[in-house]
Length: 400
Image (cartoon, rainbow, N blue to C red):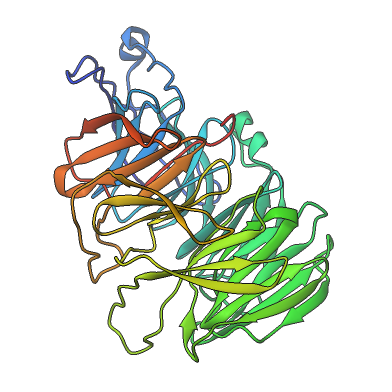
């Protein structure tokens, strides 16, 4: 399959330079070819490296922005519905495309030849110096060291294929154990743990609808269930029940400095789209679950964690709430964007939160805007208006 990628470098608000590069990916791990003639190559100037890049998706492509000024550095055309996640180093972002996972060098503003092909690329998880990709259409899990991406070739790494393909997720722990979900296309039931040789050493099938993961302090891993959350810690699974018969936790955010996980919380299994107003705080040490009523709804792209472990939730009233995870008390409410409503289709754009260090980045698709907020002061650092409305938002992470 061939895909054409055009890169247009922008400086400030004026178009200063246009450089076109054709990237062609065919089979296997993919190859690349420059579309310019030798004369064009000699006269073209390479793009300047982008500092702490952010990557935002739009319908048909990607924007790469300077992480400090928010100035648009480059536009990459990439057809289809694309998703973005940090790769785990200071240069790269993983892009989920129609054909699989592709690796973008955001600093150099170019898609690389590194590709993990497969239908329905799903969750991307970073933990303990390893990045884990789960391909839903095949059940394949790929684990690699993100530092190796700088070599420009697909890193050597660990692979594992689930017994049956499903919408799943996996995470590798510091000691090499791999926690991966169990399920089929019709039903997801729990998780298993594999040793370094992919031999199963533990299993739990008491997590209906298992979805999402997050790691807390001391490598406590949480997996969301339709009736609570499943915790794997110190070699064993523990189920923390929800206070409702149906109390679904499907999306979580963790912090290495806090034993408490932040999760969403839904109670209506029949809803076409439930717009919850409560979040869950799961204490992985005390094995307790607390619900916090925000008084406003949010979406699955609203959850994040601050540098001190604070829980962050972007509400549909446009404010970013800063919550003490130990008490559930709201410490701060920061107005960032205008009021919004979560769309019925999960692929449709809505304000999205991405946190890096002490800065929270929030997109505002309705105004084609992107904002940076200092979490310590609660003040906006910068804002930018982009040519088109964005959907997902991510960036590089190392060094922050």
